[in-house]
Length: 296
Image (cartoon, rainbow, N blue to C red; front, side, top):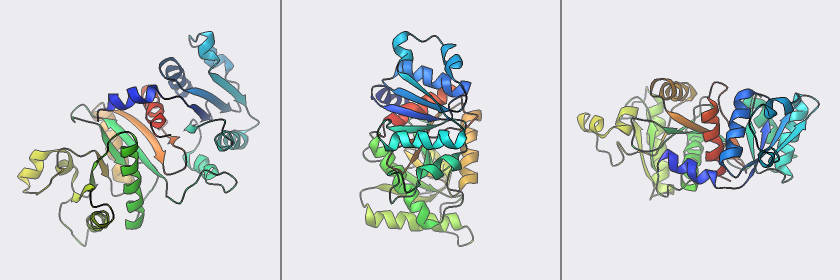
């Protein structure tokens, strides 16, 4: 699937998005762009007044009416009211604004809301890399710090489910390490081998390989030179990174050195959560909105 196809499909889906701590120019720019280019409506939660910032954009009367502004008492009230709006059906998904990720997710997971599942939540970044021939998904680059094998299995399952939900029926997945053979001194290679073995038993039709280094995963020529027998090399849809450090470096390398577009979501709760970096452009925040709309 092409990144632009996912974005275009997301634009046509109607939903209401609750934005937590929305009083930020970059966030509001993304919201305004979404109002002008998608079928989404928004509820903006913040303890600071937002009317003046929103009115500074060129919105028609009908566009402005698709944005509901809720001024709260303080940050804790902002977060609880935002999550409550999804739990009681006023909104369909959550978008993170200027609030700490851990604080927002801690609220989402509270027992008083009916939003958590038995699955572990994980972060999925969907990239449009100019040098790659299709969309590339990477997980987990922002949430699970140092996942063990069992947690990586859940991360992989979330990645597969996410890709299938946006329209990739048979995703090709690589479990990354620095090498393509198992080395007991390199835990990521051991984990990758065991994860692949697990899915070949549990989901025999899934095309999954590992351990694979990143070059062998995305470049067929690299795997040929390395004499690696791979059916997915050069054509992967998604990769699972060993830990958050390698994932975060890869994420930022693609954005800043390859000028990649990105959309970021948290997957694994009953609703998708739009989770972007504070340094992400309003364009990438808009992409994240469109991708999340595909997941409701």
